[in-house]
Length: 591
Ligand code: AGP
Image (cartoon, rainbow, N blue to C red; front, side, top):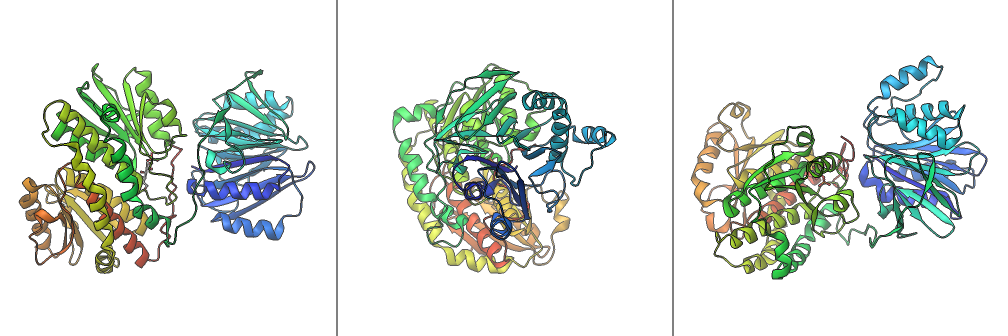
């Protein structure tokens, strides 16, 4: 998923575009580029890698005084991350930036080559530029764009400039793009945070709508007719880019967990608010998400089945959207997403809505597609996450699931405890986060390893999934999460001398079973590491992480932050780019 920003107005174009790119860099940072125009010449400057390298190049090379332009920060989908494939792309009279995947680009490219077009890059985006250039030969811009829309299959958000035309054009399908409406200036952006410093007024474009932006006006067309669209007001405060003294956003965001967790729990300490968490009417729940959000869903599945008595299944959104759906009238589909813009999760949500099934989203970004379209939403309000690896948002997703399971179980008469048991968790989490030296020491013992395992049973397996993913994505240390009882059915062949096997034990009933499985690996030379709660800790001669005891509903929210910090320190020791790990992006808005 890439970031797009466009500007037309009286400010210094490159300042506005670069500021927007920095705000959008979380969407991808393989390469970046700008195209600016002074109503005569179009200047294109691109760089591989971070936006800061592009800024250096612009300061050195830019010659023109422009009053409009488009810019892009790329997460490579078609074609490797190099200068040729960096956006913007210019073919003929068309210069554009693109976020999305054009699924029929090979076919279109073949036809265009036969018509004499030559291509420099391996991207599908350059094909879009050539196709529009072709249609411009016999049509005005709007007609040409409508012909383009008819040909494109797949997803796109496009910012377009046409030679000697002095306007910006914008259109989208399945990739996010909005218009920012200013005073004698207008914007286009992948998300509001890129332009919130300039305006909080925005318009959401829908498929087939074409926006035409000039300095002092904007028009939107659909099927050749001018249409009016509602101007929305965002209350986004923009992105707090400061690290507040921490060396990485990831650490800052982990250290914010007690505060944002307390805020969430306090919100639902109000009985009225808690009514929104009661799922007693449902007989079956499908939890649909991607990555860490899905692993939060795995925790939810365990809690719903164990304590609320509701059959629950977790699906990766990328599978769910294509699978045969079997619903009974009392099914709820819960979507989980930090960004609210994950393409697969949006598609799965829209499928469920199409099939008239109740949807509820647990989402962090209030200005997102999922927040706008889901039947019901529970906002986690973790605040913006700058670090690509999610931490505080994941913890709040788990907390929402725990409060949902608790509230539903209580209302069904299955639970005796009082909701106030949640209130102790934020302070206990502070104790977990204070043990930084312990995580540093443990990280020293594993950061040079080639590979490691996380093993656990029941809900602990769900925690293993997230613990393993966090370690992999920030430190590039290969890791696998395995149901503890499953390992011996084949994969134990991978266990080698000194390989760390991290065993998570928070369930008293399953403690001895998990320990036996850990010992099976130690018998083959593994380095056994235990992650457990104080009440279960009788492991004297083990490397271990011990978190305060709390409750079976809330142990997860204390265990995973410890694993987040362990991953952080392993990544630090391995010299990784902790806030922007290689190959990743914060919001995956493509399939
Ligand atoms: C980032 O740390 C996560 N590992 C990533 O898997 C993320 O959870 C996934 O891409 C879903 O993103 P979303 O929550 O914004 O939908």
